[in-house]
Every structure is written in structure tokens, then in C-alpha cells.
Length: 628
Image 1 (tube, rainbow, N blue to C red):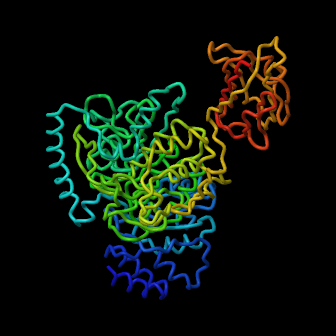
Image 2 (spheres, rainbow, N blue to C red; image 1 turned 180 degrees about the vertical axis):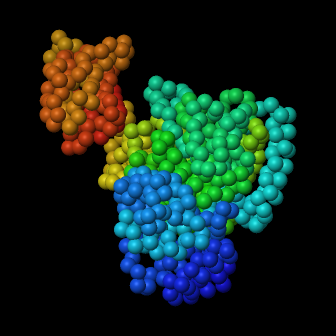
Image 3 (cartoon, rainbow, N blue to C red; image 1 turned 135 degrees about the vertical axis):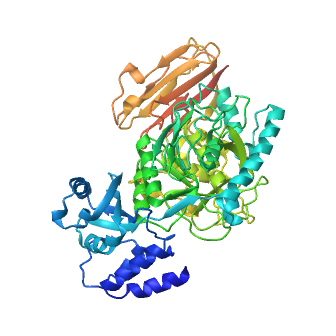
């Protein structure tokens, strides 16, 4: 394949007639050089270049079974994209433009103006030249292969059929074990990432920690929609051309889905990171066929399907191809729409950039074993960000079965599952903040004490640590948002994490004790409130209660007036308070407190009990007045 690459690059520097021979060779030999690279080398010809080709080494271009070549086209605006679609629909060949040679086309992204265009292979050179001269075309790329990334098939270089046979053999053995025990199995990864600790806390305090369901989108080989241990209600799908998304002839996608959301407390199979199907939902994209193979166009359609579905999390245990401006555009769109994307780092065990994991707007996930050590097959580079359990992972498999797989493909749904689990309790946080909190609270796997390195990123994801940090500091624990949000996505150890030492806890219980007396005594103690509102004063409210009997003593703004924006209030929040214990609670219905420079403070007998701005949804201060 290297010989093909060298000869094609040499040939591409010749005339346009040489280009015709070059393209034919590239298509017929399945070499590793792509048409885009060859055409970039030919850019010294006399033709004016308005569009540009993405020049990268591909996984191999080839003629389709119907003698066609698939190209990815990014137009400069929506009108140009519509014109192209209209031209093929009307077969307007007298225009003598490249659109007249399209055999089929489909829209991938209307917002980013990306389409998939199928061209007859015999006309590819003519079409290419016209594309390059078309002022409406911004970028052209050749479609390229993408594939699932199971560790066994890559590490051992075995065929997919060998991989499937091996998996099903394990599946039969493990299912027999399960049938004998008649118990629900909780795998080592659940405890390793602290998922069960979050379940316990939120179950104990359901009123304190209400949940907003998060939609998780999995782009893979499909989903067994009739599996006994997977959610069946509310599961939606996107078909990218490989059939029903809720069917899976390979098993890889169903396995990943079980890691994220196998149903708990049903006495069957396993438990996923999110065991309660009422607290999350799945959107499934079948972007890979039943052999685990797909294309850039099918995955791009899948990403767009995730975005359109309203998903907040995208999990991709796949790879293939180089860095692509087309993917860059869609990941930017997803990030700017508050979506967090996770992808497998790859399974060769070397330092290299695998895509999509190595895009800055994608969280790259590596794998650890049951002892928390980096798996030897886990790829690494400067974009590696988080680690998850990825060795001998037992999960769901088509036909209501179960199987064991290893790979960063398995680690990715673990990390994506943690994001869904935690984000559901802090929905007001942005994707950037959630990403940073997961990194901030990860368990470091370095031996020299550093926080992050390119072999293990920030470390093993920790659900309870992330939950606790958000519970303590609110979304501010994830740092400030950028405008646009995608400007903050750096990736790897370069992610801009917040300095939590400079933050004030948002939900801590302040306590104080002072001497006082009854209202008839000269030692009258009154609580005073000073409040400077922000631009959304209507979101703020407060109340004062006595703890022993729960009696509400006062509430609302000072003087029982409506709050006004950017206004300071300063006055008593109570009358004389008898000895006893009281709670002052200030709340924000949006969940982010009072935006600085706005703030509140309460004082008792000249002593400041609490002062804060970005306190999150609520801050409570408890104080006691003792008898003299």
C-alpha cells in the first residue's frame, strides 16, 4: 500500500490527463492514498481553485458495487446546498455543471451545509475539476471507511467472524453461569467508577436531588430492542442506510448500550451505569453494518441524527480515517448546542492520533483493567482525557444474551454513562462544565503525582467525586463558559479546569451560635439581610424558619416588596428572635445563585453569618440563639 501511495503522489504532480490515470488506480487498488491528497498535489495546474480538497491519507478509496464514488461536499451556504439538491432532482443537465453528473445525493447537515454526493466513477475527473472551480463549494472530501474498535480483532488481527465466534462462546458460558445463580450481576467497573455510591445517595435523598432525564446517543452497530435487560420504552433511532437502528447483527452496539444502561433491580443479567430507565433515554444510530463497518458519511449522518434527537451525550466506540474538516464542523455544531461527545482512543497500544477521539471537541477515552492499571492495548496521545474500565467487560449481547469484550470501546460507554448519571442531577450545567468536572475529579493514575499525562489523561472517571464537587460548588466547579462554547474545547491535559480553591461552597450548611434573649429582653436579636440583585431578580427568594417546630417566620424580599433588577435591599429579615435554632434559606429557581457583582449577606447582632453570590440553587444557614 505504501508503494501505491508513493506512485500516486508522483503521478499527481503531472497534467490533468495524468490525473485521470491516477484516480482510476486509486479506486481500483484500494490503496491508502485518497483522491483528496492526489488532487491537492495537482493544484499547480492552470485551473482556478475556489474550492479546496482535504488532503489526508485515507483508509482507502474504492469503487462501489454500482460503479460509483461517494464524496463529501461542504457548501458555502444553504442556498448553494439547496441548488445542488434541486439540480439533481430536476436532472438539469443543460447547465453543464458537475451536479448534472450526480447519481444520488443526500443531506448530512443543513446547518453546516454538508451533503453526501455519489458520482459515476468514470466521470470523477471531470466532476472534480468542476467542483474545484465552483464558487459555491467550500470543501470536498472522499468518503472513507470507519469501523468498530474491539480490542480482540485489532490486537490479534483476527477476522470479524473469529471475533464473533469467540464472543459467542464466552456468551454461552457466562449465560449458563447466570442462569445457575439467578442473580443480577454488578460488574467490577460499577464500583471502580463509583456509580453505586451516586445511586445510594440520590435514592436516600430524592427530594434534595431531583433528576432531569438525559438523552444518550450511541453511534455503533445498532441495538437489540427486544433484549430482556435493556430499556425498551422511549428508545428512538436513526437509520443511516444500514437498516433498523433497533436491530444489531454484530453485537458491538448492544454491548456498549448495556454498559451505559442495562436495567437494574429486575433480577436479570447485569446492571448498567444508569440502571433506572426513567432517568435517561437512548437514541440509537446504526452507522456501522452487521460486520462492524461503516463510512465517514454514515457516521456524519449519525452525529446529525444525535443532534436532531436532542441528545446531550454522544458515545462513539469506533474509529477510522484522518482528521476531517467535515467532522470538525459537526463536532463544533454539537458542542455549541451543549452536547458532550465521547470516543474510544483506539486499541493498538501506541502513541498516535486516532479519530474521532483526537478531535479537541471530543473527549478521548482510554481503558484500565480491574486493578485500575492502564490496559496495554490502550492508545495514548496529547488528546487523551479520561480512562474507564475496558478489560473483560461483561455486558448485553443480541438475543437477550451476554458477552465479554475488551477495548477502549468498552471504556467509552462507561465514561459516557457517568456523564449521563451525574448530569441528570445538575442539568443547569453546560457540557463544558460537565467535561471539566469529570476531568477535575478523575482518579489520577500517574506515578509521579502529576494531575494529568498523555498516557492516562486526568485519570479514571469518578462519578461520586464529580457529583460531590458539583453539589458543593455548583456549576462553577466546571469553570466559566466560553462564547461560542466550542472555543473552550481544548482536549487532553489542556482542558481549562477551574481553580476550586477560589470558590465558595454553594450548598453548605452554615452554623452560628450567639447569646440572646426573648423579645421582652434588652438583648433582642434580629436577623438583617442585605441583598444586591442581578439581572434576574425574580429568580431569587428567601425564607426564615424555626428548626424545632418548622414554623415559617418570614419570607420574600425585605419589606415584602417585589424584587427589582440590579437593586440593593438592606433591612431586617425578622423581629426579635427568641432563643432557639433557626434556618435562613435563600433560593434561585434557575439554579445559579445571584450573578456577581450581585450578592446577599445576613447578619445577627452585627456578626456576618453568610455572604455569597453564585450559590447555586439554594444555600442554607443555620444559627442558634442561646439563653443568656
